[in-house]
Amino acid sequence: MAARGPLSVPAFRTLWVAGLISDTGDWLLLIALPIVVYQLTGSAVGTSAAFAAELAPGIALAPLGGRLADACDRRAVMMALSAAQALVLLPLLLVHGRQGLAIVYAVIVAQSGLRALFDPAKNALLPALVEPGQLVPANSLAGLGAAVARLAGGPLGGLLLAAGSLRTIVVADALSFGVAGLLIARLPRRAGPGRARPRGAGGARARLRGAGGARARRRPDSRGGLRAVVRNRAVAAALLVALIADTAQGIFVVLFVVFVARRLHGGAAEIGLLRGVQAVGAVAGALLLAARGHRWAPVALAGVGAIAFGVIDMTIWNGPLVTGSEAAYVVLFVCAGAPGVIMETAGISFLQRTSADAERGRVFAAMGLTENAGQAVGIVVAGVLTAPLGLMALLDAQAGLYLTAGVLVMLWTRRARPSRAAHRRMTGRRDGLAVGEEPWSKGSSAT
Image (tube, rainbow, N blue to C red; front, side, top):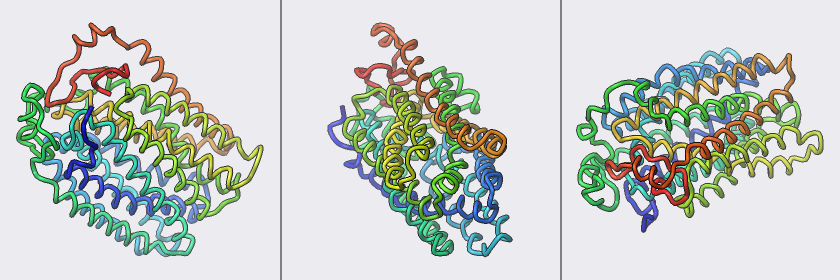
């Protein structure tokens, strides 16, 4: 167990603040753009087309994002991409009605492509900044920052758009990318974790590798594309579960707006409020994991989180049969935030601990591709089948997919749990991280 929290490490603290600022600006836009598209098109099909446009670059550019993260200085990659993300927002300032719909789609595509290059580098960078025992708490703190950003940016984005201030949203998000890039530039080029590791655990080499050390990472196992990393059975299984869960997420992102508009008779402010208050539950979940996350296996956390998410979603979608009270849905969406951040933290931590540094960028690129592909399937299903099957049938199916993902994780955990002797034989350590280690039990060092 780590003696100190991740925020005691200056490099991680800087990265965390950069993410908090950038995510707050992002949530202004993430809430605003789907509302803009729905207002301009007035249909679920038009909204689904916007989300499909967002996912396509993520699928196409995932291999490039993985290679950049594994072959280049991750710090430099993140700095350059932050600047580019700020610049591509500016055309939104020209949107003044339905004729600006093409600009909205173009910005969505550009932002998605840049994010597909940014995220593998970010997720691959984090393990170089903290001790192995701090990894789950560090990821939970990253989730906490995202939750706080959603809590601030989500409702504000809806309110600003309701007041007709898309321009204000664009400027604020662009500035957030700029500030985040400046903070990332403060990270040391070869920053190691806050405390030296024993040489037997790869301490000296890991410190040289650090946050950006591209030269130290160029090893024989850095060759090959995404296929090379998915040969790891643990990674492949995680990708399958992610595909199911993100298909559910794809259905949600399209039909949530439609659900609030048609079933709850809400507008932009209500949409922003309900998406934003999920952050309250996410904050609670992230704080719990930051304090106690090192005690639990990531796979167990992922399974419990997915099942809880499915149960809560099923309750939300069928809630209008019982009540139309806005307060009731605020409470339900607050509750939905905790399993969401638990699932995300567990998945990221699991992949970070089961992959070597030289391939970690490609592992997260494969995860990003899977997430985008799953969401694309869900978006197409939502856009095409809402009219013939009905809104409620698809929403209930969405909740069922989360339940399926959680049950699969639990079954996988029970079947794959090795004996203690087998567990000792299969584990090894490289660069201070467990390589090939399956953190099935609470007592495992990989939790």
